[in-house]
Amino acid sequence: MLHQQELLAAAAKMLANARHITVFTGAGVSAESGVGTFRDAQTGLWSHFDAQQLASQEGFAADPGTVWRWYQHRLAIVEAAQPNPGHVALANLEMLAPHFSLVTQNIDDLHERAGSRHVIHLHGHIGRFHCNGCETPYTLRSGDREAPMPPCCPHCTAYIRPSVVWFGEMLPEQEMQKAWRAAEHCDVFLVIGTSGVVYPAAQLPAIAHRRGGAIIEINTERSALSALAEVLLLGPSGEVLPKLLDALPRTSL
Ligand code: OAD
Image (cartoon, rainbow, N blue to C red; front, side, top):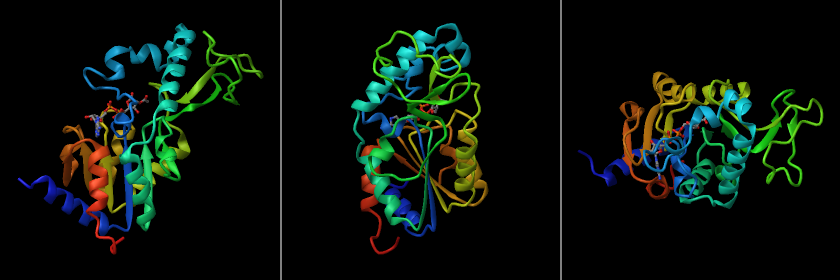
């Protein structure tokens, strides 16, 4: 059984020899910033809230006010949060790598605030809004955030919703194509802080693996994807990622 130091060195060597690195993140990468994960038994959002009631068209149709207020509550948490050392380490890795892609399931903007560029958001953005009817983008007006109900579209009067992917909805086409290409063409696929149970996003590691990409995983515990991992680094990503960057031979990338 290799020790953490040896695993870190092995992962650093794989990254150092990579031409194309693709990173795939989930809620775990933002956990240390105070943005809750979904499926943690105690603290996970879905252990306290009904996903179908709050993150679906049916839920929004049945109770638009509760859905609106819930997303405003979550947006306030994201805005108050700061990127953690894990986000910062990924922004630094992007600058070192010859070719780099960052695909996230997260709807927060902590990767961008840490300096990551061209982040591929598969599940949308909690800080963006559009009409649930005509899909016209919408910029929040004063009073909208505190309002008990979502605002109505100035064009078609349908309700405004957050630009996030709800259960049963398709992923944004362009983002999906970019993410699939990034998985197909990478040498190393770095999976961070995801349970790997939400599809189609959770297909990406298997696509990379099938195409010969080496899988490195960082998680506080084993996930549904760990069987694919050549190296599994167990620990909080805000602690492991800076150590992984420190273990990189500077001259290599
Ligand atoms: P989950 O909550 O399902 O999984 C979070 C993962 O992060 C778990 O495997 C944890 O063990 C791990 N974790 C927790 N803290 C960590 C830390 N500090 N460092 C590293 N890992 C940590 O969240 P996701 O896999 O991102 O989708 O969930 C996927 C999707 O399900 C979300 O994008 C959302 C949700 O429903 C939609 O809303 C469409």
